[in-house]
Length: 556
Image 1 (cartoon, helix red, strand yellow):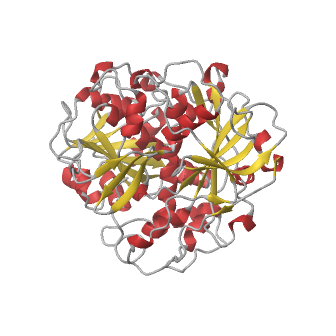
Image 2 (cartoon, rainbow, N blue to C red):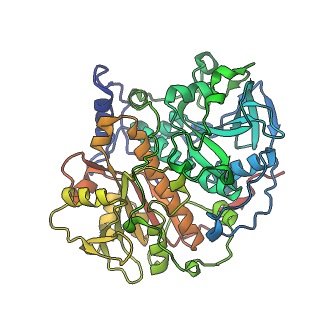
Image 3 (cartoon, rainbow, N blue to C red):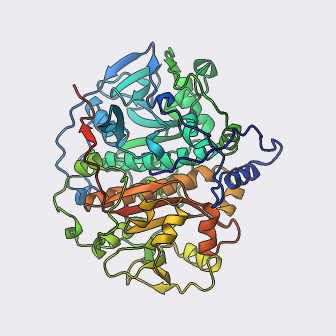
């Protein structure tokens, strides 16, 4: 993602009223962490880059397993990635491949003595707050139990040994270290942690498909996730940054799944009950300290984290594809190379740092990008089989055959109705595509508006398209405050679909987490909290900096 450093602000010690309800806590947090045209949300006054928190956590006093660093040759074209294929064996080589292509390093960059890692999933400010855990049972070459994945060295660090598993299985767990983001972005950091997790989940779904597997988000609440991952062992984290439990994902062979697995609450019977912390023993290890001298405290982050703990939604069996949201069959020739491999797309993905401001996005690529955001049109929506709650609004600058202006892509019929009721009455809602649910709201030059709304960043105006992801907000938060996390995950998933589809077509995407929230809402005519914008994303032709040296991800 591309995020502007926040302007100077003093540390904020005030706490939200602890007696308020969780949904009120969420609403208050969201309001107080909005950026405004005349001020930014509370953040650090200065940044000492030499004191940046360690981007890689490791666990000392554990048994480590070095994973194979060489990727197998996977001759699977990007266009063929969703196709069924024989499942890879449940072994250390397959797990290594999955981790490399979803949460591992893809390269190092170096400039003027500075060196930083790139990973398979983007992160705000390249801070990567998401930690990855592996629960293995009967996986050849890996001891049964709980392991922490240390992406810097591509090794597993065994935290606990497991017994009593009912059957072989493989699960990935994810947690967030809020301080990695808060160090730079202050109170708004919780939002960015959740957007990052959405990118991670989408990245796992693509990598799993390469192996003939499918990924399934399990409906386990935060406390169960904490037990599964050992994050409730407070003594183990004494004196170091805590990790916030997020979610557990089951990985299963696609061919073994029943036809209705997408809408099964437990993913066709592949649950995590056998992997609860009660089955683990012989705990080992101590997590590393990431920042020995934190200069600020942002207590509202812990407050909103507490208020939003809960389970991901269960699959919605009532939601099915409608004729308006059915897959759009597009000519695969829109790609820059019909034979581009899926591994090339994943490993070469970068977050653009600048766009040329001139290139025109081909219409076929534009339609492909939008089509893949609709239910059923991407592997990601098999992992997240829920009624869509986040919907793109587009500021179009340079797209072949598409007039500049403001457009909406409601991802469900219900959202189309609700957005028409909530957005400006003067929007025209002219049909802009014969198949896609794309509507022109307003024809106008939009580049300057996109730049202003995106914290005055040129990358939003030099792109071909700038997206605003508009979430169905108030009702879902009132019903379940944990939805605050899940809405951000969905927005991050949308961004990841865009960034990989753009990469495959020879273009590039970048997330923009810094935007003026209520200025967005003013442009759209939103006057209440029924909808809220959660994320910006841009696609364009990148300008690469030749001064940067690219180095291998894992140099022997």
